[in-house]
Image (tube, rainbow, N blue to C red; front, side, top):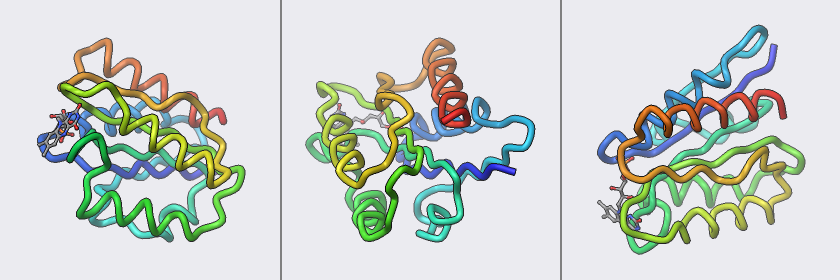
Length: 143
Ligand SMILES: Cc1cc2nc3c(=O)[nH]c(=O)nc-3n(C[C@H](O)[C@H](O)[C@H](O)COP(=O)(O)O)c2cc1C
């Protein structure tokens, strides 16, 4: 049985919708998927998972949400994540996606195996956006 953790922060629900669709795509035979808001997730969830999907919208000025997601990602930087399959996703509005580029670079420097490029969806995901999320989940499950 493969364990996949989907951990996200969402203020107005857009990234939450993405998280649920990523989880839907990742589910399969012999794959168990656990979806958690970052506020109730722990580093053990990361350590116990074979693959991890992390979601956070662009906040502040092109940064991760600062009270829960940023500290969680900082704490992850203390783990040995070399080779662990990871995907990143999140919603944004007016920016150019810099928060995602920075996040990808940060995760890559930890030695994780990014199973795909970070998925950015403008505001609330429509059906096409949700399908991209499911596809991201499928890729993570195969990674
Ligand atoms: C305080 C705040 C800061 C934001 N900063 C950015 C930003 O720098 N760049 C951007 O593209 N969108 C920014 N947004 C827009 C959010 O990324 C967008 O509304 C997103 O859909 C929120 O996702 P959520 O529903 O998962 O919280 C910001 C929104 C808020 C409330």
